[in-house]
Length: 333
Picture 1 (tube, helix red, strand yellow):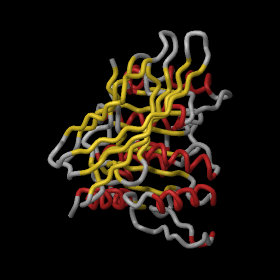
Picture 2: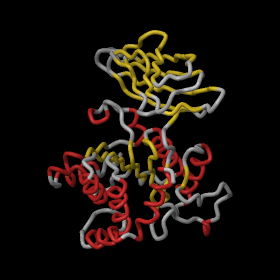
Picture 3: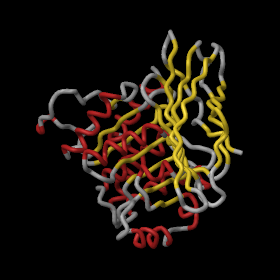
């Protein structure tokens, strides 16, 4: 049995486990401002504990009740929880809720009043400064097709080995359709029980990954990779960027790594400079570390960080797959 198959088996058996039932009894007696049912909160708690997940991202904090449940589970694994909610109306309510928690929960929880797109772009916060892959990513934010699809794309770029994405409210057609279309163009991801077809939606045929729970559960590849599908990363950087560094999970084949860099620089006078740079590098087989340098270093203004989007494609004659052991990292002076 592969590692992925083991994970799927654990997920499918959670609902029947004694541990889940005990946690459910405890949670059902706990008053919460979460929209999630006690069953759903108990499932997420048990999932984090059973799989030892310690880097968790939640999109859609709401009022923080479900977030506290996640934080309690992550605490057991000595991990961190990042939660996102762009609602201006709820910002102060969420901050007040988190401030009322025990210190040990507050220390591991990081709330950002941002969309997932803005959050991943602005990864210059200290908690993410060295790059991060998430073990578990929970999508319960914008339930429009565009919102859910954007969250899926963003989450898949920052999911670690055998990363798990849980999408809430599976029975809302825009959400279901977003998941279905995401899986069409990301063949290295799958719904854990392969229950989503590419056929037109029939509302009566929409089913969750786990009976009686409102979730679609997706699992990613053993190792995140760069291939012929576009891989995109982005960051706001104050300083000088020389290139990007890749650590590989296994030696590569002979191939070509191509990249396009879209760079937006706000100058000290607040005028904007735009640059587009293309880089290509031939890579010899056997490499486990690759430095892809820009044609020349790019420097931000002294006052304002520059925004960099880097798009990567890998081509070789064997697998067309460059497996990563850690997140790509910008080389910054």
